Length: 276
Image 1 (cartoon, rainbow, N blue to C red):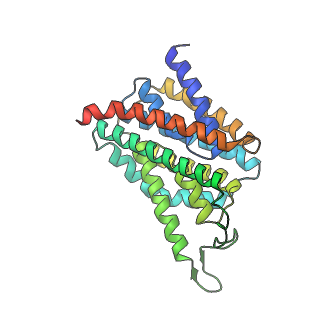
Image 2: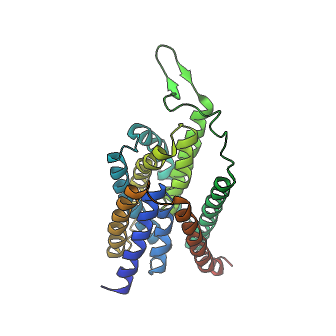
Image 3: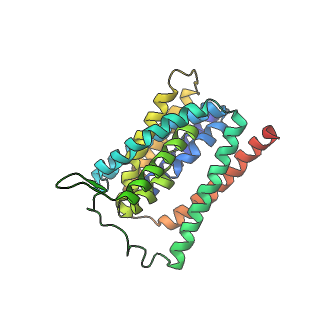
């Protein structure tokens, strides 16, 4: 086994564990791993979509068997995000690779910042009373019978978030779980136990749509590397989803945040010289 394949196997396991246990985040490392293994930015983001799609599907199946997925809500969110995913995929092919790398580094910094803020809030106990004004799980956004009713603020929140997730997925080859999970929790009133699993359904749909939009563009990553990363990530996601209720996700999230910051710095070092 070559060093590149071995690296892809180890990285895939880490990505899958994070995605399965935290409901998102791990897939943001797929493209940087492929970059570090010699792929170009467009090759890496295309290969990342395969990793994201297959891994999310594996995690979603496991979470569904555990009863932690609301399939219809995840599918609806993913369907709304398809337009953004297609637009993002086409935009990715139109920008210079240094810009793509810089955007990726910036996104990872944002993700690390959001995860850090969430951990701080959790430790300080600021979540008290956070559910007071939240809708109930069975509250619909749209109803047509017996009369038409629209919870328009919630509908707008879902539309904006889903479109943003689709754009990120198509443009940078990431899953966007760090946006999907809180959106499902806040806008659709899903408890976190359901939001993490349901987000994987949405991510599967958006990554598939983005990959389909890139088909026929001539972008061909090293499929052996992609396959090694994908298989081990899918296995890791299955394990992560199964142990999600038994591990200290706060510690896992803190370790992952540090890893994202490190990878963001590495990607920025690669991108900045070309931009200047």
